[in-house]
Length: 474
Image 1: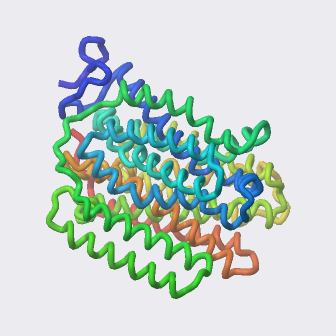
Image 2: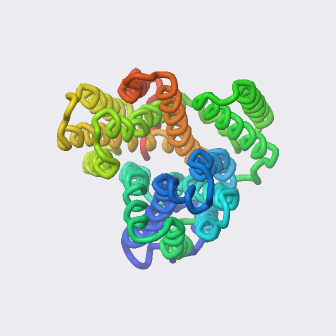
């Protein structure tokens, strides 16, 4: 029987719940649990972008070069993406809530290390640990939402999750600018401590704890996953920036070989680290690759957008930051649509429409006159952000509802892998485009975003052919 909004029927905080909680929480229990989830997402994603603004100050303070300080950003991103799937498997073994708590603790400790770092090497290592803490939180957040909301309302939970992701990514640079206006860069990391303490308290006392049935994750598979994804990520970054081609090819070969060994090694496992078996399901496969293409499209646009606004249109860095917040405004507006319709309209329809709206926003941005006003720019970016919000929620919902019970951890990891993988590939594509195209490269990046958004919409629409209908919600 579903839990109802009454004190007698809501589980006490911290009590282990049976699998019966899969129909969701209600009332105050749901509010507390979702507050914990939202704070953990903001904690992880604010720091994904917050350090970028401080790189010049960090280089000056630690007596290093601007190019070397890029590793402050890369270490966080790389450690997060290579550990995401192994940690999602760990979450299915020890409990999603427990792994989230561990992630918050790791994040707080590494934030202290970042703030007190005496050298770039120490700061980079601390940022790598911080990325692992972020992966602990992000790798299980969609799985936890699956247990916080009943199936019939899952779209509402994913809408809120998507909103926090958008706000975290959009507000990071703005928050960094405010902090640096009053104090020094270590405070970008010190502010994580009180924020993390509140998140830790709520996560420990409020998150649902469904009974785990997974076996211990395969350590060999975890190692191969880290080596494979790490080598592929480094090789892609090297190709994008024009580094030594021989070392890039060696990394590419090592990454491909390790990934192939991983797939073969885990082919008979019921809970693989890299859950490629989930991709055999047509509904899950289409949703995964739609998400991957969609995030490539978004980063093709968003990563090149500061260069376009500053170099192509001549806006200042401050004005550029303010104009870019219109993407977050579009995402926020989209929640009014997705929270009402994501659980009613099939993903093949809603996600496709959202992606086409995103593509239309990119097209209108590409057609801007040579000297556009702030409003002309902002509303086009907001339209693209609105469409992207409409796309994400039903697509992620389709991924989570197309997997069997007990595989929520692997599916949650793959949701995040589609996001982070797409963002990484999109950023690499921008770097390569700007390196190879000497004239009007930023506008060519916008055109790349249009192409990938349309391709993602077409793939999403293939679900309407009837070959990938999600299982009915019970």
